[in-house]
Length: 209
Length: 124
View 1 (cartoon, each protein chain N blue to C red):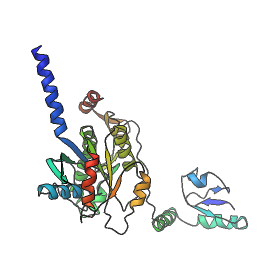
View 2 (view 1 turned 135 degrees about the vertical axis):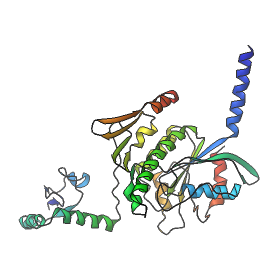
View 3 (view 1 turned 60 degrees about the vertical axis):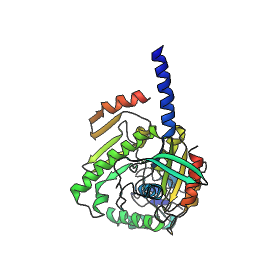
């Protein structure tokens, strides 16, 4: 009887604990600006950066987490653990890194770590309460990676917001993303320059209820 | 007006499905339109082009129309295929579906990550 009561209390505690620590994941293909967005959020609300960004794809090769990020908008507060994930790709080729000036050995190691990162990112999906899918709005959204990520999030009933990043660039085409994923909220932002970031914080409250 | 595959020279009839899906013998997506009266002449001219030249011709046109060829990666039952050191193909469908983590090293050589496989089974 006492054990049952203890289990009951533990259950309530766990539910309360989980409720308090919403996990907000950032997913997307490599070089879409996931870490740039994570840095923007962390800079705005914690005053510190989350990870290193680079023009070379697969800079983030391990899961990065910042606990207790509190966002405020319209007098409301929203707290969550922010999780930045490695870029999801179907082909990882060290020669791509060599072209960006990395030596062969380092490029091969990077490719190996990037592949491991893809596995980790997908494994972590089970822990997420809501996901921000960051896409590069200058690139074609009809891509195996984008479609698979978004399709699987829908199948798992995880709330999703699609962010078309890099809208500051001339080639950006947000309409194309909207027509590729018409059933989702698509918001154009520039994580680097802060375009539309205020609107993004407002939308975040609707995503994580 | 018949068509001729740039890659393999195969003649394709007007209105054929191959014009939409790709040449049925080589998968090529570029075709020359040929007037019937120039058929023989065209065949000879295309033969004069080397495989390299044909490849470059395709590449130039892909660049001009801004088309990036990125075929989806669909592997057999493995999730990861190691092509050579630093070159990998990942079938993300298998990973998202929580299927056992299997690495293909070469034909007939596989590594199965039992640890993660049992972990995934618990979650299922």
